[in-house]
Image 1 (cartoon, helix red, strand yellow):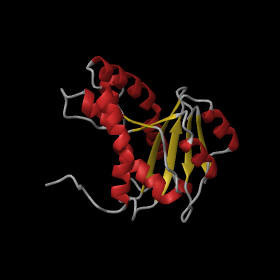
Image 2 (cartoon, helix red, strand yellow):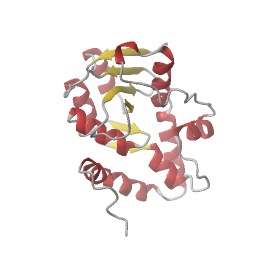
Image 3 (cartoon, rainbow, N blue to C red):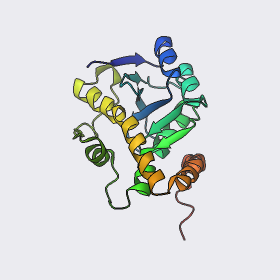
Length: 207
């Protein structure tokens, strides 16, 4: 794949310097399941606005990634996720990274696209970017990070490659519909939800 690089354990210094020059970085994670406290973090994908993607293979038992931590915690770069709540909890629990500032395309879609019940990445990319994503590798085994297939790596790359375009289009929609302020309020609540998730509280706002 063009504009694609695989790193072991952490961002290379060269990629760190490249990404530190970006206004925003798109990020996603692949894990062995949907419980950050139980399921291993296996892969972290990043993409800049030019579409240069890096996939970081996380080693079993790894607890730090200093270059990645520097990038994700720097305050002048927006980190774009789809369903940020899960990825933020995963990165914090496994690598001690408290990511900020953040933009979540799933939250943005739910606030802006009230005409649709479909807020998954596949639906968003199809409507807003005109591209049909192949999600066949979504539930595959990510644990054998040294032997990931080309299909898995292509899937992982596509999960971040289009987030920049989605962010811009959703931002325009939110501002047009005068929902930008409530979007910012939702994003400011994300650290609280992440903390509750990592403490296994569930939904404390239920009756």
